[in-house]
Length: 102
Image 1: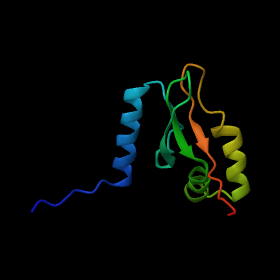
Image 2: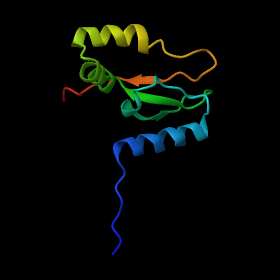
Image 3: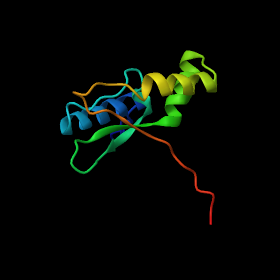
Image 4: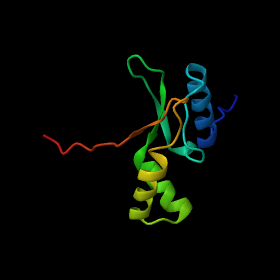
């Protein structure tokens, strides 16, 4: 019986990035944040864009770069949200809102 090979998180992200590139070769994301990519988004009249989880970005900055919560948000606001150029399809960032119930 053949064992099913499980993909590592890094491999999953590489495959997702490749899939997105097939649909939009100009889709961009900030280097070093591959683990924060959660998918792609489609917008009417525009090319698909890479979607990153905002909370994962903040947590990565805190863990990898040793930033406090406040420092991570400041870095995110000034250096990551404005990432990219007008010739690229800029990434989008998802802020997951948790429902408070009914």
